[in-house]
Every structure is written in structure tokens, then in C-alpha cells.
Length: 411
Ligand code: SF4
Ligand code: SF4
Image (cartoon, rainbow, N blue to C red; front, side):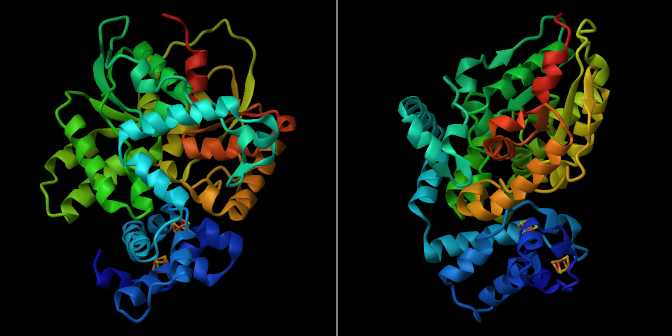
């Protein structure tokens, strides 16, 4: 983005109406508009780096809602990422964020880190898990990490039980690989049922969005090149993501970043053209699904639209479509369905009080609907929503694919 683009901000204030942080804090310095002005001043050398400046820039969910509404077409997203890099370089990061960056930069480290964390979960004293929180989430509410990483537990090529109707690549992301393998198993089950041959490349790695958000651009770039190398020559109809943030990376950020580094972006663009979120893919081919007609019990569900599903893919519309069409599902739309939950990558950890207020508001609205299932297609939203429920709330938070898969007829 050029300086001229930043100057294009007409200060109309439309971005304030959609910014979850501004809407909660009602402070101009928390607004996207103010962040842009500060970035402009910093770039013009009229504002020095400081802990306060870093704090203001970081107090953002990177949800993309400001960019989606801006009439001047300002790409807040990339401008914020550039500024986060400058702030990380000049102000440094906390040990926790440094550790996260270290882990995400190499898949073998994540693999090792997840094994260690799983062992830690086994031996964590109950009283400690009850009393301590990671950000706004009590440790006792953290899901158990996958016993075996999803990609290790599954074959690289999975064939359907009938003649294939096509081939898809499944980009699993870190969350499905290490934390929520139920999402991955359900996605595979549905795709097989539809008749697809599924390729799950073993060497894929973190999509890089968390690294980009924390200003680790060089480490992110290495992962981006790895993923492009892994994905570029696979002969498939589509590259599916179950997390819209991974999708945002593959679809928009990879081509932009490759181009910004003066490299040939044709492979990144080829990949981007094939990226689609798994819910949209399923909705587009709904006729391929056969449901178990013997199931009689109807369940009541609602849906939380992750910011990137809404702002990158508009897939929240398809997710709702799907839920409305599912037999045995009574879909109850939440009035605040597309309001941010406050998860925002590591936002729930860095700004637990703000995140808690956001998620509690959502929980109240979902409880009013009296549903048993709360569905969302972002692993961090799932973590944040489920992690802040209590046992008395009697709601289960799942990825929509889990529900779809459980309703299918065995074939
Ligand atoms: S919506 Fe765009 S033009 Fe309007 S204040 Fe926000 S950044 Fe500026
Ligand atoms: S990305 Fe989201 S949280 Fe950040 S400034 Fe824009 S609207 Fe606000």
C-alpha cells in the first residue's frame, strides 16, 4: 500500500460502526481511522515508536471489517500487518508471543510442542486447571489436543467408496491438525460421501497468518513458499479450507505478499483461484448428500459467523443456507450472528478483558435462543465460545461439518 492510499481516508467514520473494538471501548484511538492516522504519522517520521503506539496498533482483532466497508478502498489489513512488523522490530514481543512465533515457524516444532502440551494437559493438577486462565479462557475449558496430529493419522490420498467425481486438496491448517481432529474427520467423511478423492499433503504447514499478525514477516514468508511448493502442482478441482483465516491467507495474502517481494506470483495466483471454504463447497453440491431419514430427533442450533468467513468468503451465507436445509435441524439465527466474538487469533490472550465482554454478550444471545448446538467454522472462535461457556449453559460448540456428517446416510 502506498502512502497516497492512506491519505485517501476521508475520515467518514464508516469503519467505526463495524469495528468490534471501537464499538466496545468507544475510544477514538481504538478505531481503524485513528490507527491509520497514527501509521501515517509514523511513516512520515512525525511520531516515534513507543510501547503505547504498539499497544494501540495491537488492540485490533485483524477481523478485516474496516477494510470490507471502507468506501476509499483502503487495505487496512495489509497496512496493519506492515505496522505490526515495524512495532515488533522496534518494541519487541512478550516471551509468550515469541514462543508462539518460534513454534509456528516450523511444523516439526509445532508437532513437538503439541506433544509436550498434551502431556502437560494429562498431568495438570485439577485445582490449577480450575483456577488459572489462558487469556479469558479457564485452563479446564481447553480441549484436549489431538492424540496424533490429524495429518499423521490420515493417508495422504483418501479414495471414496465409489467412482470418484473429482479430486480435492484439503488444507487442514494447524487447528485441525493439532487440536480439532473431529472437524477434519467430519470433512473427510462428507467429501468421501460426495464421491471425492481427497489429497491431504503431509508437508503443508501453518498458513502464516498468526506470524504475519505478530510482525514475523520473514518467517511467514518461508512458510508461504513451503505451502506454495506443496500445493502448486497438485491436480485437483479445488483446494478446501475448514478455517476461513487459512482461506484468507491462501486466497488473498499469498499473491499479495509474493508480488510485494518482487517474485513471480503466478503459482500463488493459481492456488488462490482454487481456494474455497469447505462449507461453500458442500452447499454448492448439496444434491450429492444423502441423509439418514431414520433419524427423527430434531436438534436446535445457531451459528456464529467468523469475521474472515464474512469478510473474505461471504461463506456465512452458505453456512446458514446449509443449516437451513439440513433435515432434523431447527436452525435459529442469532441476532448478533456476525458480531465478532473477541477471539481474534491471540486477541483473547492479549486483551482478555475486552475479549471476555465480547464473548459474554454473544453467549447471552445464544442462550436466549435455547439451542443445544452452537456452530462456527473458525477454530479460534470455537475455542473462545466453548472456553467461556459453563456446564449450565448446556451448549456444545462445533464446526458445522461435524453436524452435517452425523446426519448423513452410511453408504
Ligand atoms: S471507512 Fe475508510 S475512509 Fe472512512 S474513516 Fe474509515 S478508513 Fe477512513
Ligand atoms: S481489523 Fe477489525 S478490530 Fe481491527 S481496526 Fe479493523 S474493524 Fe477494528
